[in-house]
Length: 84
Image (cartoon, rainbow, N blue to C red; front, side, top):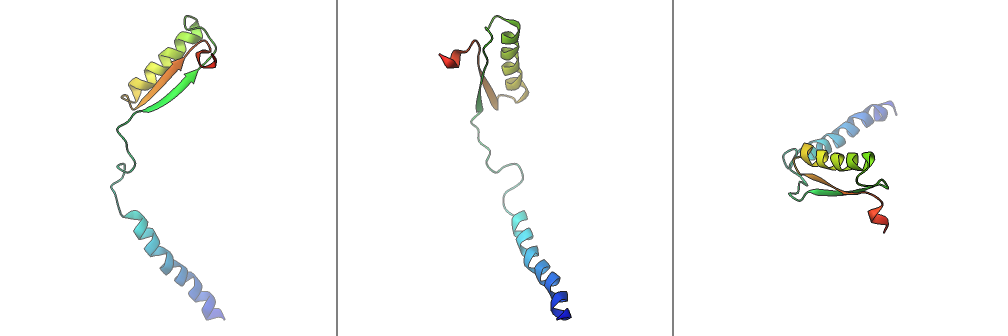
């Protein structure tokens, strides 16, 4: 009985090591699932476009596009435009 209990961890390790090694192979890091299409997000609020919070929303959308080099585009809808 004791020898079976000693063999169990060894057998588990031997079974899991090939799975870990197989999971590490394949494509290079950072290349899987990348698309050239930008990610488009919609951002809406109820402030008028000319108000302080309304202009900040547009600045935020522009900053996201600049920081992500155009990979993320935020479509900004001020003044409840999406609700009408």
